[in-house]
Length: 112
Image (cartoon, rainbow, N blue to C red):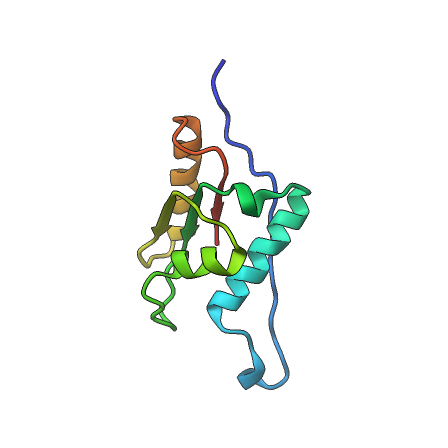
């Protein structure tokens, strides 16, 4: 029997304050969306995440946003990934994570 990757939870955060200076910074938005996805999945996914992938952003140079996000989420993934920039990058990153799961190299992966 083959392993089939399943998306167990999704999260989206909309942050449009009247004063743009009060908007959340990208890492805070990623954290909020990741927590929404864990809640949507109704599973304690944050503790079990073994791979954490982050789409790079052009507005903040975090150095290693995947490691920073993992720390904020309280997880210790064995593998972290940070994408390059590009229009199809989020979809490509999701496909990469699905391939890791299908190949048995990851059990619970998260992207932000």
